[in-house]
Image 1 (tube, protein in one colour):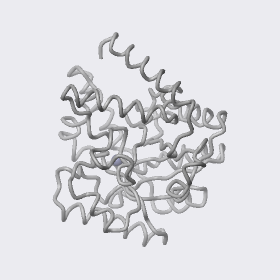
Image 2 (cartoon, protein in one colour):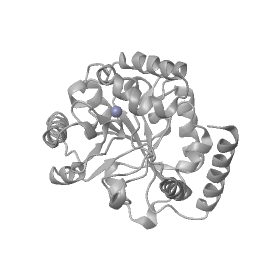
Image 3 (cartoon, protein in one colour):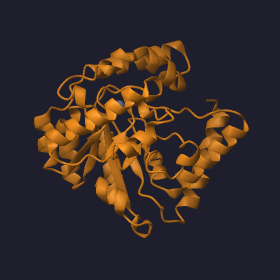
Length: 304
Ligand SMILES: [Zn+2]
């Protein structure tokens, strides 16, 4: 992005943040993290920066909510509340996030890939070409930058994922576990039957192992681009589903089946965090979406 374009973008974000600070959010904001590690990948955050984010929340009087509270808090009581989520279930959540969240007396929701519990994040290797084409290409501009991103993600794919014992231990300390599918596919490239399998299988494995009802889904790669996926989610008794920071499509604006989350990683500044917590963030996204559709450009529809 050119320097001038970047400056305009920052100024617009500041203006929307200022406007947003005058109003209470109508919905509880949702933060999206993945792994706590030092690889520098686009889905990694170091313990140092993660702690800074939580300290910001604490200093500004934010309380974390459970999923149940997220879905049932009336619009008049959403101020200073936030839902913290983690996708994929990296083992670093047990070794790093758990002690930090305990220190701050915060809770969080983790979306697990049930076929990979206790294994490694091997879907990154399985899907590397599609990740490169659909995702990394949106972020990196040169061939070298793209290769560097892929290298970091491959490094991350060797990371251990949480085991059932660690998951049960974390449950005792305020963590909730929900579905991130059974095998972490892009839903836009699989069939209706395959999506149905992913939703049903992950739900039943989680419910069997944790003895609790599973009510939420996070789209793998934040890819919700399948015409029947929301219908299936409702049919299989999911109460809500989470995307990334892309704008929901058509009649899904405000829907519980395309809930926006702000992806945060090592490079996210405290302003990025503050902005994502402000109602101005939603207005900014609406405005960007309108400008893009006027110019005939679509926003990236997937993330990690
Ligand atoms: Zn994921």
